[in-house]
Length: 176
Image (cartoon, rainbow, N blue to C red):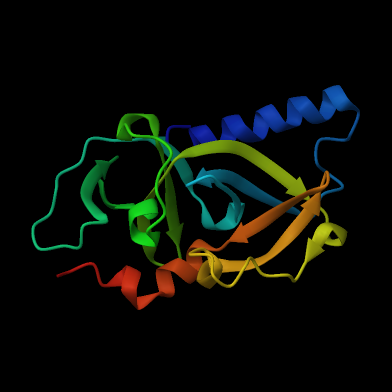
């Protein structure tokens, strides 16, 4: 439970809300994502690309790296590179203390990385009918990592793809 504990708690909370509201525990939904916020922008990342969510761990700074590369943390014996996503995207964080922020861990297709975000809000479920292949505004710093949106409850839920971030050479080359 330690590895995927927070994600599992989010899933169980959603299941409880589903039962309370009368829907059948997400069985009619086709897509699930982890909802997070950064710089006031609410985004949703696919569950298959997020392995866990952590509170800010202790980390060791690295020399000769770009300022958005915070360092590395030892997470259950694995070295996790930590990056400040708001600093990388040049979006001001709404939280001044790093200890209040969360880390979204990507363990996808041989990429193991931690993305520091302002907050994680939970898991949201969507149907295929709610998906729209409409991109976020092209001037947005999130645009290169966006893959459409879901429209639900009169709200846009823009999809943030960590896999697209990991393929970005500006992200993968953190050395100075």
